[in-house]
Length: 281
Image (cartoon, rainbow, N blue to C red; front, side, top):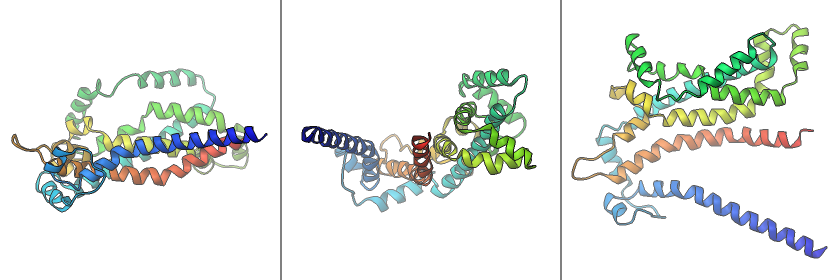
């Protein structure tokens, strides 16, 4: 009996050590990036990996803001695009998934197959046609083309559909209809709370993907007042003689920080969803 307990404790200790090591390994690149944001270009060239901060943060900030990088403009534009994209994608994908699960209609399977077929088309293939269409309707240098297409998110529809099929009881929907609840009221007040864990998970992925998106904004936005954070970071190249790596790392750090905030806000819903699934009979 004692040997079994000792082996169990040993196994738990090994698991904890491995988990701690993997956690530190995941945090390490971000820590190096933040530390390099406080160091000078010369220090970075001498030692690219540093565990302690330097004293060049103010100088790097001056160099950064002296170029075409405007942190406030980039942050506001990226936040508007990412927030709008996340809201549109999560809400309308959840609505579409609900229609595929809760309603029985003739072309339901064909419609779902069409959504899966659209999922196979990469965004880069349709990029030129999308730009030409936006140019003809005068929507270049506008944030709307970067937000509204998120209404059609095939991958998220698939994820939400699978989640609803596993968690939603159609008896709840039938009871709401018997009580006189309208379809949109049922969806907004009953279905959406059930889907909170799935919505939080997809919101994180969508926000991060939209925030880091460079391809479409780069071909649509040509005015500096419309630039997003990734575009500004991509333009942080020095002249032919010198590149200020400290300011580049500082720009990358400013780009990454909002992603940490969004993750920490929404991660509790993911953990709650995992716990709920583990306790469900």
